[in-house]
Amino acid sequence: MVVAASVVVMAGAVAGALSAVSDRRAADEAARPEVSASPRLAPLPAEPSTAASSAAESASPTPSPKRSASPTPSLSRTGRADQDKERTAVTGRLYRHPDSQVLNWVRSNSGDPRRAVIASRIAEQPAAVWFADYAPDTVTARVAAVTSGGAAQGRVPVLVPYAIPGRDCGGYSRGGAPDLDAYDAWIDRFAAGLGSAEVIVVLEPDSVAQTECLSEGRRADRFASLARAGRVLKSADPRARVYYDAGHSGWNTPGKQAAWLRQAGAASPESSDGIFSNVSNFHATAAEVAYDRRVLDALGGPASLGAVIDTSRNGNGAPADGEWCDPAGRKLGRTPTLSTGEARIDAYLWVKLPGESDGCKGRPGTFTASYAYDLASS
Image (cartoon, rainbow, N blue to C red):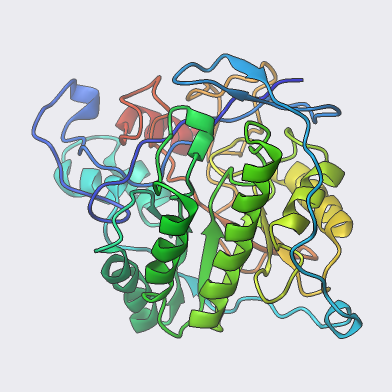
């Protein structure tokens, strides 16, 4: 089986949303800002993998075979006391950051007939804020702007650090920090902006699930940096909850994914609060719940580990044909919440903001009103 690699647009100087451009391409995309908010991760095929997966090369959605993983030593172990540790869920309500592409569109298009639907069903929902550009001099202040905003409202922000070197195996979202030493220093500065309130960190989408393009040595080095990142984040803010990349239910088998996650520190409570899945994807919530529980069971670690799921566009599940680029017939999934009612599922999140195009219904990474309206009105 093969999988398509992630497709992202790089974030600019401000997390979440940046400056607008003045060009208007069509009436349907009036006042669409040129921003770089949540990157686009290309959805992967709908059927679970039973063999080695693959990653797309360069800017093409055509997949290429991945190499099978080689085991590396586990970076951490958990004791019996940790195994018996009782789970504690994140409390409160999620934070909606005031800077986003959809909010920019809503503010600029008061006369558009689609505005009311987009505003009420998408713009009013809390969504993650991505930090996808390597800008070490400004990242602390940018993170602090989000976390302090959440703390002031007594709400929980969701942050997505996305600067791992070798990102996307050189595909659409290639980039990030120049090397792992630089990444480690960037994470230190990211962590310095967390503050002391509750925050959810969705750590490096695709960084674990999509590693077969790396050599055994480079994979082990990446996993060591990810384990370190979790420790740094949780040390900087003991109330931070850090989740690691589990791909999704249509990608790697639970056992294979769990083995990699264990090497990346996801089973250690010093680094991790659990896993995330379905980021920028379309797989049904029920499928993700079942998959995440199987990954957690295979992962081991303390009973406190849980999972968060991206439900932003999965209301109709994944297309049967595996289409990943703004596929037709999709709709919004469950609204973001910290109260899922599901054992070991800590939150449903909107990690990717609905309406931000994969590149088929609009320019990649930009908010497309027609796409947002289709998702919101389906």
